[in-house]
Length: 461
Ligand SMILES: Cc1cc2nc3c(=O)[nH]c(=O)nc-3n(C[C@H](O)[C@H](O)[C@H](O)COP(=O)(O)OP(=O)(O)OC[C@H]3O[C@@H](n4cnc5c(N)ncnc54)[C@H](O)[C@@H]3O)c2cc1C
Image 1 (spheres, helix red, strand yellow):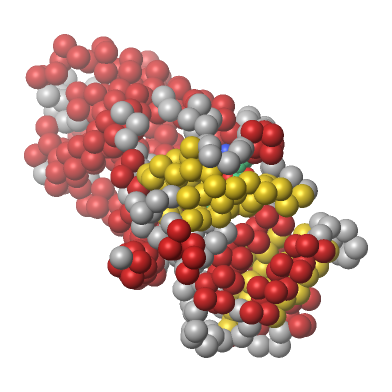
Image 2 (cartoon, protein in one colour):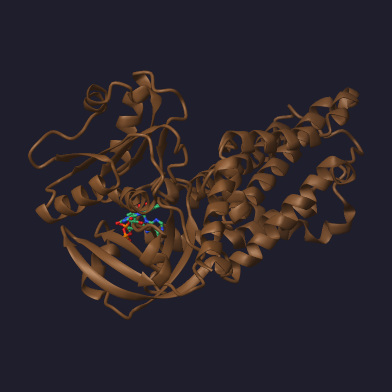
């Protein structure tokens, strides 16, 4: 039974590894190519004297078409589907692609609107003339819907622009952003109606029609799943808090019993935890390996730091026996370049995936290439240090602790000086965003080959 579960977890990680090369740019590029091929270039070249008007209309249709296609992609990416997660290299990449598609989609929607407004202004000045009897090809079938579709398109665009601004303005609290984000599926329905009503017959009749139908049907299914609260439901397991221990400095270690429904996980993966249904799910890395006692008891462990409004309430509220919904596992920060030398760098609470991996190394009998763990944190307590040293030495990992209360924070130069063959290593980072940015930039500028710096994008906004 356990063996079968570990096999499921390993298969999951193999999928992630196999498809990791498919990054967000490849996926976006392929998407744009399909849409580009669908564009009816022929109707532009045959236009004759009606060329300016034809160009205007085709730009209008193409921008609207691309906007709706990208918004549909964004809707589908929000589903947290395991297949798509493995194609793009992890849920964090999935969210990045979701954000990118949504931003480009809204940007193209704005372009579409500005083309319409610009053409109106040009017509007023007599600079653009609609040829007599010109048939734009918009199906007559939906003519009674034109006004509603126009209104929904315009209002939806204003609302979407406001939501993109909310996502970009970091000063707006996350919970407000998350709540406002929930109206996006409704706006999408309005965009679909707008698209169906105004898509010209020429588009319906060729490849673009097929692309449109696929995008819209997929987007509508995603909208239905989103509005009915079914996203991720088949990866959710109901668990129970077994034990809560304070580790000091606002960190709570939480043991959770999940029962046999949990499929297992790879060290380094994370899950979405709902301790309070009104608050919703928060992502935390699973800080324990799925081995030995943990796998036998169906138990996982997380370490949660009070970093914001919700997590600050947990030290007073989270108690043993409390129910918890766990969704996952997710993520591709799974140390899968296992054959080479590795350098691990943890900043503060970013230690959690490395603890899980250390537990895995301790449990595994296989030999591994040298690993150096750099743990940089403010005030490392003697208990934490003792616990970490024990597990690191049992897992044959060289530990370097940088207590930033007493010394300067770790930088890439220090790592390079301590590990002469650092360029032949894969580097795994987990910790604060800016710390990760600075390290990645320094290692890259010193010649670390591309693709050897791994980090979890610990930000879903
Ligand atoms: C993949 C991943 C793994 C993580 N692992 C750990 C861990 O092991 N231990 C730990 O202490 N922290 C971890 N975090 C960070 C943790 O999720 C946030 O600190 C926590 O959700 C903050 O919630 P808040 O309401 O207290 O803070 P806020 O002040 O509301 O938010 C601070 C930031 O946390 C993020 N955030 C907040 N709420 C959510 C949410 N519901 N979903 C997604 N992101 C959110 C946003 O980026 C936000 O800007 C992880 C984050 C990610 C993305």
